[in-house]
Figure (cartoon, helix red, strand yellow):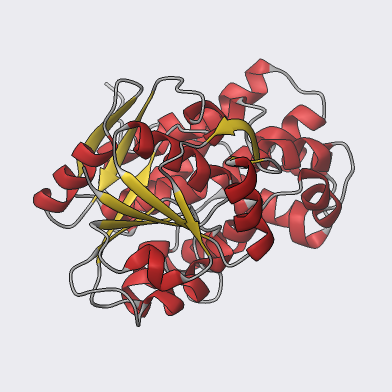
Length: 336
């Protein structure tokens, strides 16, 4: 049995708390929001963000960060990506040397173009930082519906420790040394999922979505490999696996926001309607910053940015995508 500090009490943090407690671990959940912690203590349920998932009696709750960190075998950082840096900054003074922090949020910081693990390493340099990603909506994980996920870490020892901690009959965990590739796949798929939702909102069909998923993963892999990620990662769980579920499921806040935008909502109005952090909005500008830095073409992600931030009508963006210069699908293929 491990002692685990869950840093964040939103939908994903709650679902993982349920999973880890079911695995027999001792979990202490921290949130900066006193009302949220009081609700969890009273009802043992995240009523606003993950209703119906009842947490075990063994789970503890606190607003004191130190209580969720000191003496823990590992920490799970489950705050939305815009709050990763500020939360990691608070962790610096209470995290022990080589204490494991598993980041489970997905995103890229717009101003610095850093991945979330890079941010955590900068703010908490003494920590051993790992990532966990894959097709795993909280709404299904919290109900024990089977899925498979991947953990990325710098050492095999850390990866296998996390694998053993999370592994269960309904949560299969693979390991990988490609931390960067895992994070890029996880963050960029949210931008493509916005595009898939926009297509749904415009009334387009399955053909359109399949095309977006296929060309979307091509864009993600093109940028990811240019940055040093492994090509195999983008055809794996944190790449095509997470992209498929995020583009297809109504659990996906990115797809839901995209649907509203396709129907004519502004980006701000769509985010207010979804009532949760839409990670793809925060990663979209960062993705274009990375594309410029590495001189990579990302036509789908570019058009999503035009819709989100420059007011371009979604139908016009689709037309421009369809009428781009003609291309060959496999760039290094040779004719016989």
